[in-house]
Image (cartoon, rainbow, N blue to C red; front, top):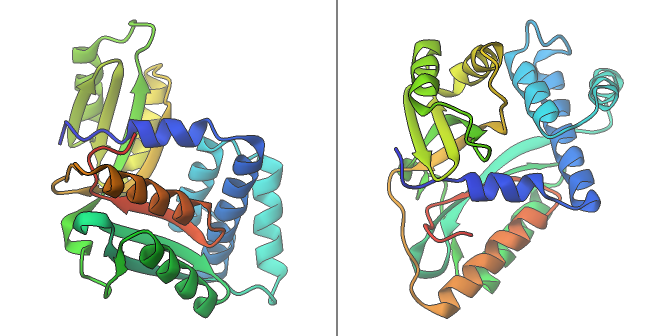
Amino acid sequence: MSGHSKWANIKHKKEKTDAQRAKIFTKIGKEISIAVKEGGGDPNSNSKLRDLIQKAKSNNVPNDNIERIIKKAQGSTSETYEEVVYEGYGPAGIAVIVETTTDNRNRTAGNVRSYFSKYHGNLGQVGCVGYLFADKGVIVISNEDGDVDEDKLMEVALEAGAEDFSAEDDIFEIYTEPDDLYAVKESLEAEGYEIASAEKTKIASNYVTLEGEEDIKFMNLLIEHLEDDDDVMNVYHNWENCD
């Protein structure tokens, strides 16, 4: 599964400005609200909430904020969010999946459709590109200081339940089944490894390189505008050159 590292995207997310970081907090808050309304506010019995709390912490959301969101969701009946997934094609047929959380399906659908249309893509039916992606957990460990032994890390990761491992430059990526992500992460932390990122994601079965400058420009714009939309939680695609 090596050769298609998404570390550039993850690192980019980590280096957001304060305003962008606040937007990330808001988006995760929506996801937590949905999880609480669906399965209750106890992470011990609500695995989805437990995963989202881990996600919030990995994005440096303060514990007080997390607790406040959970309490608000438990007591609120006014805010109703739903999760809606859109699939489509970017320039030159690049496969794109957009995960959203919205309190107004018409607004979100209109915005997403507009982005695809404006930036030389088109929105498709659900399922049109989903089969090209697999759900995975990805744990990233940086070796910028050069003090991580690759063979030892791979051994520890596989023993902890990881299913694949890749090394590229000074970055190690450990792949898991989605449900095993946080158990593997905790095992690695217990061995003293510092985790740069641990996220559930979608990995494409193959990646496409864009050659035309215009296609590259419009693909960048499509991703940028989707990610900036308050209703959009995640954007996945099979574009190879996405730095």
